[in-house]
Image 1 (cartoon, rainbow, N blue to C red):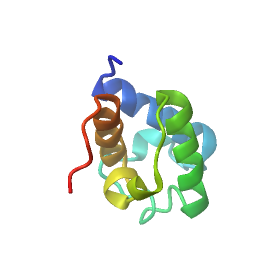
Image 2 (cartoon, rainbow, N blue to C red):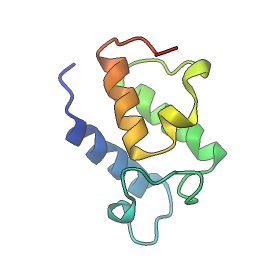
Image 3 (cartoon, rainbow, N blue to C red):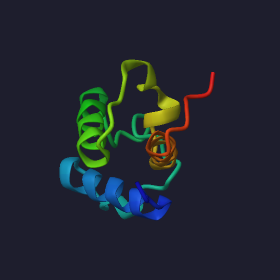
Length: 92
């Protein structure tokens, strides 16, 4: 799977714009902005985000991976997707 970091970030921003209310669209969301702290995505929205990841990138998100360091910002989510796509095991 030949994914680039930029392509993933664009796809995440597009998903956020389409599925969540963002007053200034996803361009106003910085890569390191916390989805939960900034009110971008709530706990139910995380489930929608996981569904998007699984559909878009064709891998399973297991419960143990649903952590803020994987899911709570564009930067974290991008790094997580790249690691999963490349088959890099989760760090202990």
